[in-house]
Structures are given as structure tokens and as C-alpha cells.
Length: 163
Image (cartoon, rainbow, N blue to C red; front, top):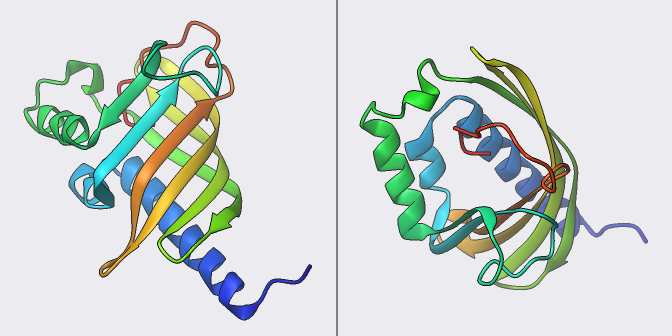
């Protein structure tokens, strides 16, 4: 079924938001990245499967909004030695789609491939990302980002950056 002009505009807004979020992460602009989150935002990277209960099972990352802010503050101390020197990052984002859309929230998904170059070597991180984006006065903001790494069932390299 063809998309309406409103649906096309929403998809374009969501795609541009996701591209901007990826660029801010790649460029280590974590203060600007943090400003994309809602006050009740959740950042989740599951381990050992995609649909685990993060309250019952271990996750690679399961941060509420205050924990996201704490990670950013820790990064700014200069004592995050796992990122000395900083990884060079580039994300490729594709297959952006709107899963559902109501007047308040948009549920979207995208595939991502992150290339990380670090002194320990180069690593590829592939994932399917799910987003809950909220319409707020200043524009779209992230209420949820769930990063489902393709290989989250295996032992992973230290992930010293925000995937």
C-alpha cells in the first residue's frame, strides 16, 4: 500500500533523527547525543538473545536515564582508559522503517553496522536497532533504544564506546 504524504514525512523525520544519532556517536559528541533522550529514556543492549527480560537476565547494557548521564560524566573525566586513544567509529544505518505510529510515539527499527578501529584491532558490530521516539515540543526524542547485536550470544570484545 502506498504511503501517504504524512507517512513519508514521518519516515523522513525518523530516518534523519537516526542518522543524526549515529553521527553524534561516531564523532564522540556524547553531550549532544545525551540531549536526544527523554527524561525516562532506556538504553538496552540484550545479551544471549533479543527478547530476554532485562529485569531477570543479564544484559550487556541496560541503562535508565540517570545511568546514561553518569556514563557521559565518567567519559568526561578523562579516566576512561579503554578509550585512550578513542576508537575511530563509523556507522552504516539502513532499512529504516516505521513499525507503528500514534499521536505521541513512533516505534521504528533499523539495521546498523559499526566499524570500530582501535589499537587492539578493527571490529565490526552488526545489529538490529529498535527505537521508541517521542514527539516533544523540541522535536523527536528517544525514549528507548534497543540494540540487538547479531552475535550477542557469544563472548564479545570489550565495548568501550556507546553502541
